[in-house]
Length: 153
Image (cartoon, rainbow, N blue to C red; front, side, top):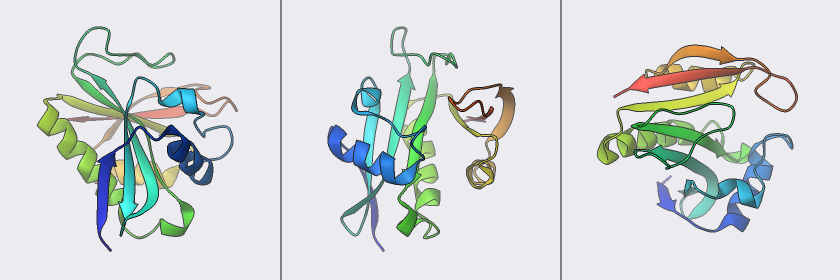
């Protein structure tokens, strides 16, 4: 399987993928993608996932309402793979690509967060050297806590 990650501005496609990847509370609506660097993940040319990044290199480059991000940080806003392609190594490819992207762009740190109950994502982040730094209570709309994980590069 040939996996690629390419920039995209196709918010319609990103929204459709998000609805297939995440539960209704976590899926982005079109306006959620604004102010972020958005990427389409493809397997053999077929759209199978997305990566959404917050690039915080300069003042005014954006912030998260619930989680302020320091300058020099790449924030993984969202990443995912549609269910039928999960377990094929695409998540590993995405994570490695995000870290390399951060290095190439000069970021000092990569930060992401995950639902406290999402052991699969937490395990993937641990595999790539991310360490949990804190918990944000009631981060998600349904009241679940978020585990913030960071990787210094």
